[in-house]
Length: 346
Image (tube, rainbow, N blue to C red):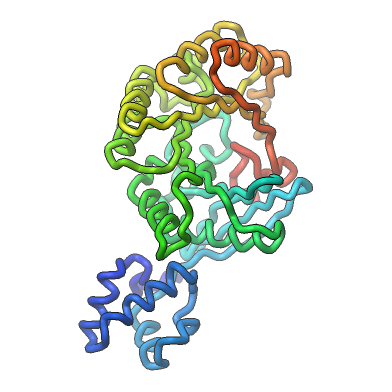
């Protein structure tokens, strides 16, 4: 049963201070509570030991803390960890801890399901049930940071918004969560260690630039030919490559920061010379780098990993034009934690 009490983390610090003043208490109590909620990650008023029992009881009467719970934790043979995260209304999203020798990265979700309809992605088949609140995104990061310290003996170093959902379709809450994550009163992480990945929503990419965000931007491109992109990402009929290119030029002119293009190569879909040439041309519009991603099957047989020769052809063509390119090998495939596989199978 969902509580009808207000979630206290929906209040700003100023609103918390005003609340305490309204009940005849000192405003600084609001600052104390705010620190417990965000900097210390408290999920219970009873943990707030510098508050009197009477004050804690008053908070319990008026508010709740709708925190997440890691319902199921799965470990991959390569060290990757996938969390099935239960929300306060019993909906579930997934988040992933990806370790390497130099860093640990949190892959977090921004929606329950997804607003878009990419045909190669398991998450898209769930459809969007609701947006995540800022605190629900924040909690995923806190949980993964604890797991990074526990299982890999180092703090979380990077965050990617590449889990379930289209981040730019939950714009306000995603940016609020990043504000909390990067704030000295939150986790104090540098925005330079955060990447928001979008399937390409031109209007919202321009808004990111106007809002002068400091994090990195990645775009799931997968084809630089409009007809092909529409086949694998049907929403692209409304968000064309021409519009996407214009928004990315706007982004770069405003921010002077490179774009990362996420790119999967599939057999018989985008593995021909014409596909390669189209990508090289598209990459010349704004400074960028290309991240070629190993495909992770989702049990339908239509999409198949392209042969290694096709990948090599892409790399050779991009490097010939001095476009930075890397190949990202998938992690956590044995627990369905790899890119495109998050589908709440548990």
